Amino acid sequence: CARTAARGTSGFRVFGLRKAIGGDHIPVLMTVFKPETPGTNDGPRIWNSQLIRYAGHRGANETTVGDPAELGFTDAVKKYFDWSPKGGKDDQFDTFPILLQINEKSPPTAYTLPDECISEVPIHHPTIRGISQLGLRWYGVPAVSNITLDLGGLKYSAAPFNGWYMVTEIATRNFCDEGRYNLAARIAHAMGIDTSTNETLWKDHAIAAINLAVLHSFKRARVSIADHHTCAESFAQWYEDEKKTRGYVPGNWKWILPPTSASTNTIYLGLNKMTEYTMKPALVNGMSTNALVKRARDSGYLTNDGDQQGVSTMKVLHAAAKFRKSMKRVTGVVVLYASDGGRTQARASWFWSFVRQRFPMILPVNVANPELKNADFVKTLQGVEFITMFASTTGSGQVPTGSEQFMEFCATEAGKSALKGKQFAVCALGLRAYPKFCAGGSQFRQALLGAGSTEMFPMTTCDQLEGEDVSVREFTKTLFAWFHSEDRISESLYKLMVDKLESGAKTNAEFQLMVKPRDVHGRGNVNTRTFGTSATLTSRTVLGDGAHMNTVSVTLTLPESDKDLEFYEPGPTKTWSF
Image (cartoon, rainbow, N blue to C red; front, side, top):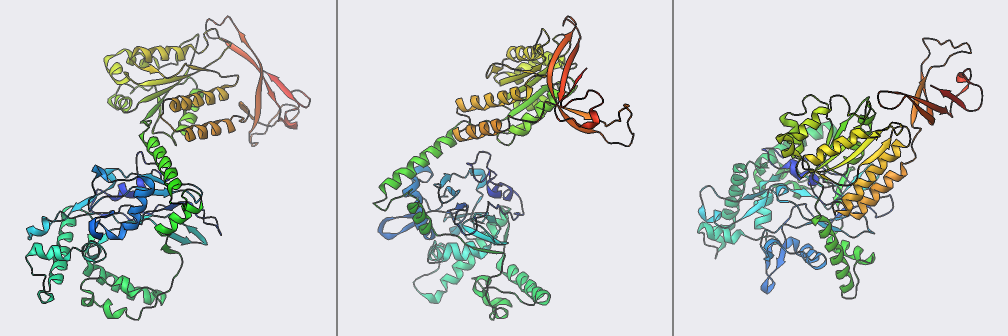
């Protein structure tokens, strides 16, 4: 659920991080990318060890600002992606961009997580002010990302998933391990404990205090967390139940025992004879940063000659990615339609279904709806930037029945307020045989212009009996071309959409007639089911002067008719006139 994951992240649902934030309980979510082709290494990969992780900057005198566990990754991101922390100054809690590589032949792209996807908890102790003054914090949602899911004979090289923290993971390991932030001495000093001798047990006091502070802070912030005693008791019960049910429970004893107060629970001795072996499905470690960088060198993105060419290449690619993310995106499109008989509505629905996977779209709105002027419709118009109008013509050039109210709405103050500054495009449908071809669409166009909207490109006209499908596709292609010319979509997306439209240009016949088989005498059986046969337009004639409602005589050719239709007119191709 990343917006997606393979794109940048406008509207970032980012791997479920948004869903995991904002409630007392964090849901466990996994985003699974496509698997590797068996026997290859072509799967997508996320370079980050976790989706949210703090950088480790190299300081003076071999010191580290931030997390020493991330020194190598920090070096790579700075060197190859020209990354620098917000504000330009190294801090102990700088979050990384996400590096996503679609396959081994494509360079990784850096995506910056939006602030709303990062939930951080300031650490305060309920009674010891000195700990609260240390300025510590930690992110609320742990989400492992550089990991492979081995499932069903396939390897999913990118399958990030989140969970929630056990307090000792943050307090004991992340804050107090000597290879991590190594804060035990600072915490003890904040408590006023002498650290010059081990006899004061300052490490024990510091670890106990920071565990309480982290647990207290997460609870106060209403972010899910569990204490290690409850987790140990819960696992002990599950372990016994699992042995009774399955008979065996493989595992690694040192990873199950909590790092603090390990001997105070039954699993300390109860699991010491546990056997470790891997069962599948399994989650296994992904490639290291060094291995990923080496693979990038082997693919030609980096060179071994001082990496200068590679650095330049990666920086150019990163700059291009920044440009794509800086493009002004399409923030919302609404499809309006005025239909007389349902054909135009069907075209509007097809357009919506095609475009909605690329842009934020509102379901097609019938402008003849009696509730058109209510607050919800006005709010819908105010929330979008673009309007597409599909309009048919009825009678001798009128708009479809009921849609006059939209014309009236455009002339009101409320309508002008909602429509002013919007950009629109009209796709008008009609019959060229009538003198006032697509007059309904022209009237909607004038109404929108009168309300203060701006036309994106000239109105597209479609003849309902001649190439209507192709014309609607041309309208859609022109819309994407306009978005591309205005830097609203990338070159690659524009070409992809055009390819999709052109590949689908040859569609089924323009008409489908429902036919019920009859015998040579024209008699049918009530139990016989009807079937569809394709029909193409051969000719048409307007019977009348075209000034009022008229009858149109059309000739349809049925190239795929079978023997059941031969009684109308024998021959290899059947032609009916209506």
